[in-house]
Amino acid sequence: MLVALAAGGAHAQTLRPARLAAPQTPRVEAARQLMITDLSVVEDPARTRARPGHVAPWSFAHLMRSMAGRHDPAAFTMRWLRQWERDYALNGYTAAARPKIRELVIEPWLRASGGRRLDLDRAPFKLLAIVNRMDLRQHEGASVSTAGEGRFVFGVLGPDGKPLPPIAGTAPGGFVVIFEYELVARDMAGLRDWTRLWMDLGRQRLGTAEYNRALEGITRRFTDAGRAPGKVNGNALNQIRTNEISLGLPWELREFTLDAAAGLLAPHTVALSPDMASLNGTEALASLINDHEAEILAGTFDFPEEMAAATSPSGPFQLSDFPDAEDRTFTVVPFFPPFVDLPWSADGIRNNDARQAFALNTCGGCHRVETGADFVQVGFPADHRLPASLGKPASLAGFLTGTTVPDPVDPSTTRTFGDLERRRLDLEALAAGLARPGAPRPHRPRFVH
Image: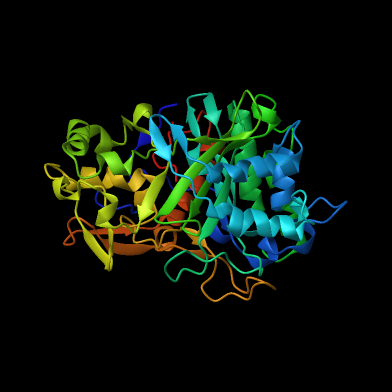
């Protein structure tokens, strides 16, 4: 499927949110209805602590059991993890093996499970956030393709119950996994239903049993088995994305989907992300951006599927990673010796705003130099109390909460971001539009990460 490429619905200079309509509905609150990180939710003992004979609906164990279909959930999970142990090719590009997955994740989990098979109730995955992405919905007139996504963000723990550290650097954790589910809707009634659920959630107060009960009612509509009869294993999963530097350099993002034939998690190309090694700093990149400059800036450029890569690195890089570095014309941004950042760039790109809009939509660009992020948008708090507790809500990048950063290619230009505010205004505008007679304004997502 072709996906529109643009800078989050904003103009190319910044990602400032613009009010789409004066809402006639209650104000949306990001912490309650969009990016839910409150400890009363992500550490709710009844809903996040998996144990035999108990359904903990926000646990990694429950999500995998609901996803596995006819397969044994433990074997289903092991087959997913073992895909890091070998090279695999997608779309003509190769994802190199990261065998440390066995030493750092698989073997410690097996030991904790008794040695023979994974005990999902002992999964080393810590819930960090539950996320509403109704801004990813697609509809026009009375036709609805999807109501967007609901997401669960987990951080991976080491054998000591603390965040699995990065192989280099000082980040509090080096491995994040995101489960991204479709909010299934095929007509306006379905879209209205999802909108009502998320809007009504705002009537509940964080920290109360009523809030958690209402949120569980929403999440189980998209996570439980059988909620999407037309999809693989009857599960609403769109994809699982991973972002890690615990297994090797550089920071790398991967994507997995449920394979229709086998019903197993299989590697998938990474959304909107070309192959960094072959394209960055080349004439081909300049031509791609120049040839589609108007579409990129207008948000109507459809990213070519044949260009999607097997992985999306976000850095830091060494110039030795590029054997022909002397022939590349990418901008080199110092990080710490011998590492550098390499934004999507090349000599001959006519419009740096078009370059930025293109780069921002790649996984690596969004998670690094284009937004000033330290590789993750949602991560472990810098000062945590694990293994007992996070102690504080998850750390959110400035791209989400609001920040201004210099453009990596033209530092005299600054870019302003605040994606949670954009999402808040979008949900308010949707609710207001649905409250009026007729169909709401057409909507096609312009930013998927």
